Image (cartoon, rainbow, N blue to C red; front, side, top):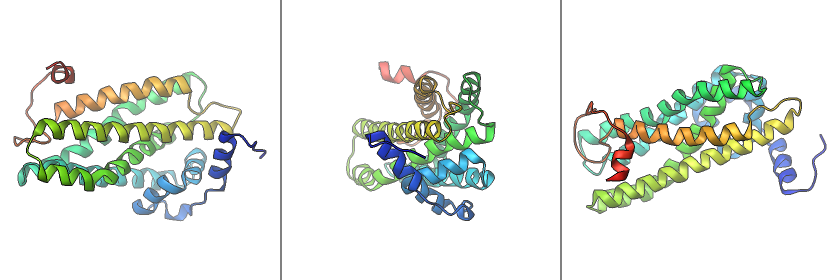
Length: 238
């Protein structure tokens, strides 16, 4: 496959040279490593459907584990039961957002010509979720320091929101690179439409904020679920 010398061409060349043993697709730690260092090989396997079930299970497990670890860091602001609550709620927010937004991603891309199956589409969305969860874990030591050493929930809320935003943007960037690469690998179809991806990512942010609002509190002590209705905009406006 001919690849030019432009920055995008060099990126595609690197992704083309990525290697990952698909027999390890059932190992969450190995797949998490592939999300970081062998995205090209992982995306090719998702596109071809090779060991798709194993990839879906591993990406789900990695997202659950890493987001739960970060949730536990959040809960350390009020050690005890709140630590367990936050560790359980963070995967609900991250993975729940991914699952809720997958049908929209699949339908609109299919309308615009994508031939990805629902399972392949779920794999692409979980690729974003796992990428974001890995960034959360990368920030975990810094988040832990400020969580256990500072006393103001206002500052910590701002810190964690900033970390979540960085993680989400990294996930979006990873998926955008994956979109361009998949379209390069098979030029006969647009696997993921660029405009759909951008608008869908905005939807993901809104859904994630609403999920976090609905399953509050994450920092302060309280029950697992308040059962209160409302919009996350209520907090932002206040």
